Image: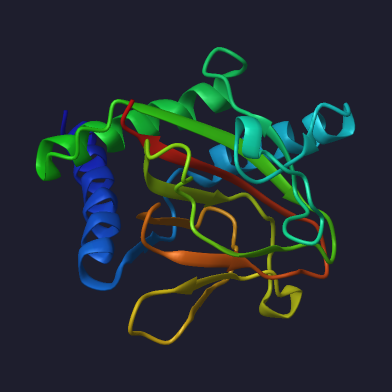
Length: 207
């Protein structure tokens, strides 16, 4: 019982750090959103999915405005499914716990989510943008979990955030590091890296 209470307290302190960051400076970050073993399992699933050929080039927009343009973004993606494997199920259940906490403490009304693996090959990038689409206002918050192993500053590939009225912020994509921000407010970009860059990215939504 004591271990459970400690675990719950640690989890909620992470959730608070993400929320407080958004309220204070437009973005929140934590270093270990999920345990290292789960980060490693998700990384292996991403790489296995990539090797199988199941990851497809990403685009921008949706439906009639959807476009694939390597001059804008160069990642390949694959959508997560909760019943696909144990690691994805554990990650998405943790996201559901975060959503429940967010709704309970901030009354956000989030009732859906979507997440995908993303792999940026060496030298690829995603130009500055916002995540909420003109054709779909359902995306309320963006969330990223990095899956990279032994990432160093010289590997580059930072997430560059542009908080209004503040200098740009560069987030190194270290494994286990998560970033949380409003999808309709915070402009950001993915800088090119000198090695493949791995993550899970997605959105908390109202539908």
